[in-house]
Image 1 (cartoon, rainbow, N blue to C red):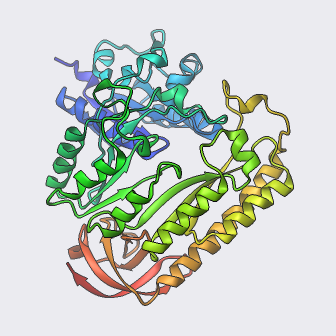
Image 2 (tube, rainbow, N blue to C red; image 1 turned 120 degrees about the vertical axis):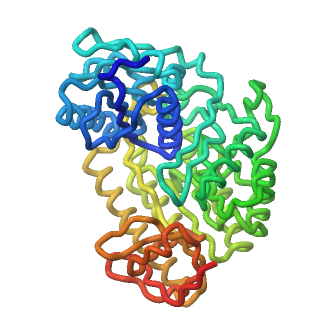
Length: 443
């Protein structure tokens, strides 16, 4: 039996959709062990913080979250898991108030470590060598009643020179096709309308399935199997590498009734010299081909782009090469990341360091470009009929949702519309960039 003082547990997740899927799965495990889940803003016996380590800010944010937890209950046990915990367990253990640090392998067995944990003793660290993280643990999040993040793949075999993800998550490996199909059915049976496929490198799906190093299935085969499941109403593909987003996948999505016309494709740089320094597996011409292919079969598709500014060797001319390349593409929005030096990466030793002030300036320029691209995309969709999945939050009398092609829409809150798919006409864009709709028809 659990001790009474250890029954309530609260969670906070930093970083990507994959982290949210894993947090949700760990929470369900602990509920099965007899814990009671409470909000992170409530007093809890145990706080579990799932960390990210893509940027310096994510590392620093961990300390802030620990302080926030202890302000609710100074006697609470603080457990840190996730990428930061795997990469720098000793550093995490030095954060005041942290009691337990678990690595990539150990986090899925957290119940084994917290039962006998005591406050004010020496911080416990259980962190494997990353080579040991060669198994797959299926995960999905169901915290949001409208959509779920379904983990289909983990780890990465790519060697991008700026990235620590392979050091934090290990080799590329996948869930079995049968397990993903079964989990997708479970999600659908809970009344959740949309599934978002997530992973570190989901286009590499099939590698590591059944523990084999070769691909047992392809990403296209996964997409086709999910498309057959009765009851699933929407499936969204999260970030996928341009070299792995094949024409046959794009063509299949264009014909599917449940896969939505939304692609998020990392670019990182529009300058071929920098793409080579980053050890990306494509050049700008292939990226352009991918975007043009999507537009040719899905003219209303939303296309998101990841880009990094301030990578070593990014001169003003090379940055403008990226800027002009993105400006020329019919894309819909950007996620802009400022390059930050990461230990144990090749890039940290490269010459041509870009001053921080210049990195921030370039970040701002691309964010402004992103807003222009998003507005132009939204304007191109006005007057068209789309399908909205309405979310449950009531925000000052309004409710929000997303169309199949990822346009954020707004209408006065109506309880009957919560978690419903409705056909709407996209009418106008408000001052905050939301699209106002009219002529709702419940599907």
